[in-house]
Length: 159
Image (cartoon, rainbow, N blue to C red; front, side, top):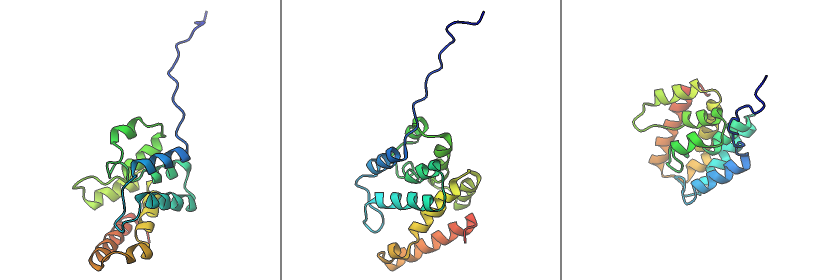
């Protein structure tokens, strides 16, 4: 006779909604500014919007909101591991997280090897290389970043 009380498996908490991820990312990066002195959350919102406009999934949009959180130490890798996010979202966040001393070739190879991550990086690069954003930087910084973004785009096969 079957067991009348089968063992209970622990219920997984529901995944964070996109609105919750956006709010979390904004809180995590509160007080941070980009190279032009703008609130960092504007960059996150632009990258997430770019992913959405490019047809990205909710998992990719969530990863876009969090794409710099671990790298900037706004959230820890341990937090990410336990977060109520899909494994795909977590993998994409880690894929686009630069590691100290990591060659750009290894970084871009990891992005290419992780399903969904390329779209996030494409949107990130598009916003970072926006001429209006670059125009407010000093010439040496603008030239350095333009060359850096072009190299990453080339390694990722983005034209």
